[in-house]
Image (cartoon, rainbow, N blue to C red):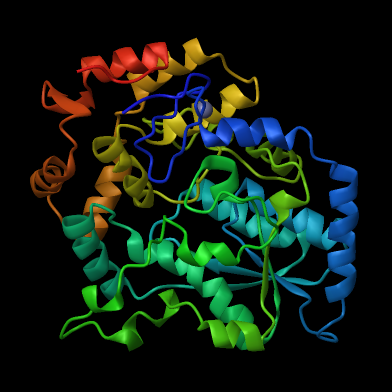
Length: 381
Ligand SMILES: [Zn+2]
């Protein structure tokens, strides 16, 4: 295991690549992006919008895959107000909402004046699949994540709305299995968040394909026939989560700090993925498995944006990244029907003991891992 010399990302993140200078792929991508001719890319985006505007008569010109978060505000602003498109928002309902998230979603629709289509998943199926995914994969929300990816593709094909708009290309910007820069979001089908676990793994005498169809991608043939064009806006516009949050706030979006609803442990910021409660237990689960979670990811991003020094980031990662927020965990336990003791037993099973160790009963980075993090180098035995 080793750490990037520039940011605080370890190479235990799945598909993370480092170059010969010990710099991670996303840090290099961030440097490369600075050379982009954004005026030219904006023209390309205008041409794209011209091709699709009115393609369905009075029906929708495009779908925006949306959560109601800060990035959804920015996407809607670009597509509807800057490019004069008639978008349909497609979203997957949370199993638990924060008050702040409800406000942000309702305000998004009212502020920009858009229609929305929301898929609310069957809670019985969710619960069964969450439990199985937790115990056997250590990825509790697989079914939910897979639906977030698959459902907009499915609806775009069924409603014959070929242009499907996504925000950022997470593989290119943050690391993943497909790191080439491209406007096409087709590669999300094999994205690691919703890794293609065979359906047979999930099905049993109670769960059949008809119960999980929201999470099924259309076939390649169906997508070709519909001329589906899933597209990342981050290819056409410089993408910056912090600036998107500032923009969204100017249009009525509220952070958890703004509402005072919740100060989440294990987070650097209170403005990203703030619509949901127990869901983020899945994000925390990366900590015992890979030795990093949200604080490492956001701190790395902020280092690349000169918003934080590496030294400050290291301190935050060591003191904050291991924490699993109590409200988050309780909501997850309530939804899945676990008691806390059984949950921690599963965590213990998945904890990578060469990366983390228990201190006073809590999983923390091992001392030699912390040393490597501080120095930006390989972990020494
Ligand atoms: Zn890096």
